[in-house]
Image (cartoon, rainbow, N blue to C red; front, side, top):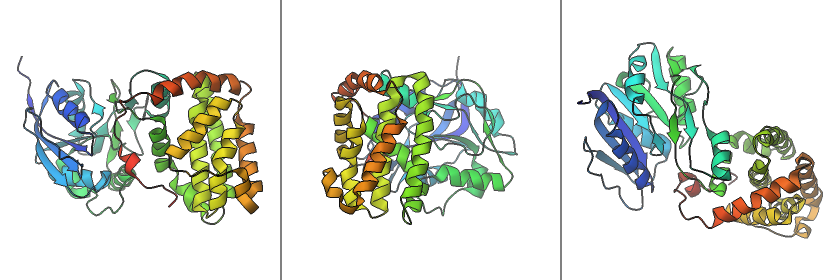
Amino acid sequence: MKRPSLAVSLVTYTYNDHALAAGLLAEAGSWRGLPRECVVVDDGSAVPFAAPDTVPAPRVLRLSPNQGPARAKAAGMGACGSRFVLSLDADIRLPSDWLVRCLPEAARPEVGIVATPIVNDAGEGLLADYQKLRYSLANGFSGEAQVAPAGVWLMRREVWQRHGFHDYAGRLHEDVHFSRTLRAAGLSLRILPGPPARQIRRLSRTTMARRGWTWQGPEFLEAAKANPIDPANALLVAVGRRMERHRAVNPAFLYYDCLYLAHALVEILARAGYSNAAAALPAALAGALPEPLAGAYLLADLARLGHETASFAGAGQAAPLVAALAQALASLLPPDAPAALAAAVPELAAEDVREDWDFSFYDALPSAAK
């Protein structure tokens, strides 16, 4: 049966991850309703994106140098010519009936954006399971949303023309900005029930930690300019609660929570200008873990995240602060922490020999503390 051609422009974005974008375009050819137009924004990739032989033939817009996700989305959606715009990150995959199922809702005049939950589906293993738990968006939710995550947006083109973030100066957080704009204009953000979208990008554990802190860290870092103690304490409380929730699913998730916390604490000290303490903290936190191999992995991962390391003696006058933060981490660990961390170690070793991690623009970002 011939599938209908819909008045929809599909727009996606690539930055050194061309295989993901090409895979999305290929999959779109199997949807029950086919987009009438495809636009690909190449946001300053080292090697320009070569459009694959798919139908409809993609139109490629190249930005140079790299502008960041917000500007790439503004350029791409602004270039769309169909009645509806479907904006998808390159690592998103949709059920074949997704577009025909969601399009009627997007046509309603009171609706600004239509989306569905996004489930992280990065394969198998401990890290993939953790990412599915931690980074799936709106999983199990449907109804009116405060924020429509930027990975999946379906809207009428007129919504973008009237309310788009053409002048937004930030590189990130465009979904928060755009959602606020649409809600202020009286338009709803609808998360529909039914099969979710999938996010398939394979992120290493260090990229995952950097991603999480990029999104969650700005308020902590701003507060750290005045005094690092309060934001550090707030972070410890928040991650402690996270550890409790994650332990109920899989105790071995503990290592990833410790990595995120350690990365964030070092960033907070660096932003506060405590450079000696920031350099001494990785070794102190690694030493606080009751499983020595896990501590060695933590120290190596923090080095991969760009944190220089020094001995505890190098902390100087900040030594009490470094010791207190290490003790605070130790106090958060559950009674079964030695066994939980030991269970994670073989998974960490397997991750380190993998070579199939996808590129992420988070890896190209400077430290948030600078």
